[in-house]
Each structure stands twice: as C-alpha cells, then as structure tokens.
Image (cartoon, rainbow, N blue to C red; front, side):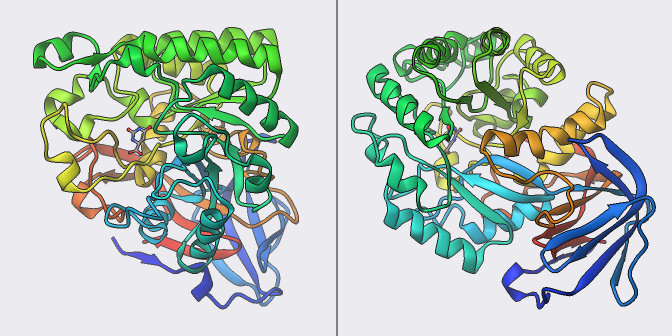
Length: 442
Ligand code: DOR
C-alpha cells in the first residue's frame, strides 16, 4: 500500500479549479443523506453534490469506487506538543498522523511549554499551523494562567486571536471552585465552552492506573472512579447556578455517563466525549501493554466500557475524540507509577470507532456524526457537514479495508499506543482539506 502526503500550502489549487468526486456513497450525518452520487468542489468550497449531479467538463475526476465520502473528521482533543516539546510531536508530525486517519480539523490542548495562555503563544501556534500543518488547527486556551489553577487567563483577548474554540486546563482539572465559577461566567459571555479534565486530584492520590483488581495485582496505587465523578458533579452544580456551556473531556466512568445523562435531561448545556481507547479496552490491557496502556483518565472496568457505549448509543456522549498524547521512550520506559500518562490516537480514531458500526452497536451515520458535526457543534465551528458553499473538508472511507496497526509505522513522532498488532476494518483512503487532497492511501 502506498501513502502520499501533501501540505495544503504546497498544492496549487486555484479558486476556480473544480474536482468531481464521482461514484461516491455520499453520507452527511446531519441531514441523514446517504446516496450514490457525485460531489463537486470549486477551489476551497463544495460547489454541489447529489445523485443527479454530473461531473462538469474540465473538472479533475476522482473515482471514489463506491466508497463513503463524508464531511472531514474532527478530533476535538489532541496534544501536538508545540511549542516546547517538539521531541514528542509537532504540528507537522501530529497533523500528518491525523490526516492519515482521515481527520481534517483538530483542537490542540493548552498544556504546552509555555502554556497556551497568552495572545503571543496563540499567535505563534496560528503561524506555525499555517506553515507546517496538514489539517486545520484550533486550540483550547488555558482557563488559568500557567494552568496553575489560581488566576484566570485573559479569556476575552485569547478568544480574539481567532484560533480559540474553548477553555480548559486539560492535563489538570480546575480544582478551585471559585475559579471554575468565574470561568463559567466569562465563557458564557464569550459563548464558548468550558471543557474539564474531570479529576479530584486529592482522591486520585497519585494513583497511576484504574483502582481495581489490576492495580491490586500489580501493587500500584489506583485512581478510583469517584475521582472523576466528584469533579463532574461539582461542575454541574456550578453550571446550573451560573449558566454557560460545559464539556467533559475523555469521559471514562459509568458514573459520569449517568451524571451527564441526567443533566442533559434536565436541560443543562452539557456534553461529553469518549476516547476510542476507553470504549475499546479495559484496565486489563495494562497487564499486556504496560505503560503504553497508561493514560489519564485510566482504562477502567468492563462495566465502565459498556456504559460508555450505551452513552454513545443514546446520545449522552455526543463526540468521539482521541486525547492523542504522544510521549518519547524516556517518558514511557519507566516503572508504571512514574511513567507519563498518555497514548497516541489520531491515526486510528476512525478504525476503532468503525468497530462499533461493524459490531452493530451504532449505525454508520451515528458513528460519523460523533466525529463530524456533533463534534463541531461543541466547539461552535460551522463545519462537519456537506453543504453547498461550505469549506471542502472531506474524508473518503473504505469501510472494509483491513489494517493491522503497527506502532512503528505510525506517522506521529511518538509510538506509544496499546494497539500495536490490533486488526481493524475500515480506514480513510483520501483526506481533503479546503478542497486540497492532503493524503491518499492506494
Ligand atoms: O493521558 C493523558 N495525557 N491525559 C491527559 O489529560 C494529558 C495527556 C498529556 O498531555 O500527555
């Protein structure tokens, strides 16, 4: 199999250039469209699409051979480590891995060095993204200065950079309830979400994997489920009292699925995302993969895994996001207790999520919805749908292509994942960013 990559900046697409994607199975998760047809792009935009559309004369033809053509996938939680930890990942290598996974837009987390808490650092990120990234880059800015949990960052100015789609101290929770109240109040006025890495650090008590039979067997300290749910329960109280929009990053426990379900029923503006590793694996994976199965929040029990799938099924969990967290071998080749938390994920978000479709747990429309418009809606981006005149971000998917994940072949700079050797079915075979083909797999 051959893979090709092109940076958008390298391609010579002109504003009037047309590309016709013929013989496509067009799927738009938002409208429910699922039909054979043609999609035509003009420059960076979608011109038209549908069963009756014909390829215009002079257009470049891409034969989709019956494969699924859908809105470009969105991953609303990645760590691309720039600035400051370029030995682990860069916008260039992270986005290369992302487009190989069919992803056209990512949201970077603020726990960089320095932290994304100032206009200068965000402007730097914007400029680097323009020069070096294969896909669109957005960012969560830090809630607190330096992510120290003490002083609020200047949220108004940070939003004005145009790259910020929400606020979080991800990597760390906001433990200070008054600071969290203020964050809700400011973000409410800015109409952006507050996203929480939900954890009560006191309850986590330096745990390194899930608290349960596996942590007991290995003799390492565990992180109990309640560490996550106590934090979400407090935040929901604050949300109810002060308003705003609340998003729970990487939900890992059945208790939090239940809390979000109940809060949504009550009408609160809350969403949650699930990461493929949490709905695919349990803490038993630590026995086989060691520190490559260590992340925060940790892999949990089978009951938690099943609750996440139920949450995805009934709409409690509206997005799938990877928490792509690359780390170098020095950070990972350590005892379990001292190794760094985190695993990579952008390159196989789609295949691991498509497993839910192949196992008949979710419809194809629902799986794709959680990585397209529903993810976009959380961060208030007007993308993730097939629409005339919309930016042409597209993913072509072969639902049956089989691929065995090999860590050493991933395009990320780091190779830390517990999925080495895992067989998957379905993958991206072409990724189009603003009308430009940035990736093909042939
Ligand atoms: O496992 C994790 N790694 N969880 C986080 O919240 C942060 C991330 C990282 O930055 O490595």
